[in-house]
Length: 372
Image (cartoon, rainbow, N blue to C red; front, side):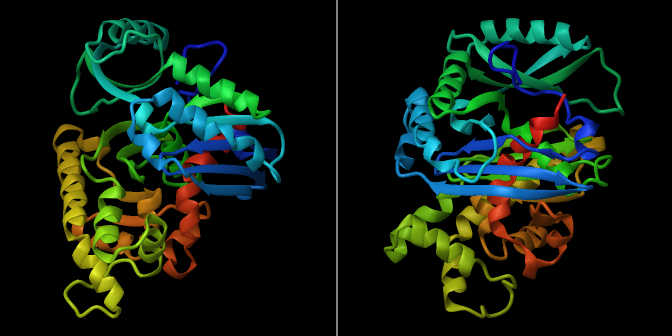
């Protein structure tokens, strides 16, 4: 995602060599608003294996809602040094919170990657949304093969170079060497390819459903081709009403959502009173995310028919809600599954490990060790 020679980030797809030779991954560090996720994978034969992982609940969640973006990153990385026992090596790939990233779309003439980068740099410098600071960025083109244009929309994911440098410095202070600062759509696209290695030719949708944001990305051939933030669809929209009405803590709420979740058959009496209560308290946020998903997929169908996905992979805290995949499949009309590193488990609900959906982006970061 970057142009900086000192903090390289990745735009190109994973090298095919990574799929054929044994290797240990870097330490993937996914800094979220509510949690920090660390993961390291290794390749054995033709299969991925999760070698080490850690999910740490942050105690400064409110900081993620402030304007102190650099402070948010520094606070998050300050304790990483104490988390890396059991991980191999010191090289890391890092993913920053979506709250410090900026998504923009520019119409750019068809050109080489180098020329496109130069035009994007000029657009960022002149953008009214910009903060006047140099930015690191990654991009992808969204094009519809049914139309012929000399100009196509280019989606740009960027972060202030000051914040990127602070993240790299924070990791270095923790004894870790930052090789890559990645963008969430790129990590999600690689995670989709890792879990669905035979599905690359077909578009697949991913939903990163975190505490403070929900991002829908459509990937094809291991690369993002479309992304949209779903308004007012973060997991906090679910947690807050439950906590307020039941008088429980956010941690207790997350446990309740994972243990009981939603009534998978809303037209029949709930098997669990708790599930029924959760379904009632979260009816509004569920309707919002269903509406946002429907609108977005309808827009893609109209504007980019060759990018319509046939599957939705769920990541983040929202993916840990019991029965959420079945609910979205029924309500949105697209096959929805909780992301799993081992593909065959995704089709066996009783075998699904929800923690893998939390670790998905960090796992994809770790796999960048073999990227070219």
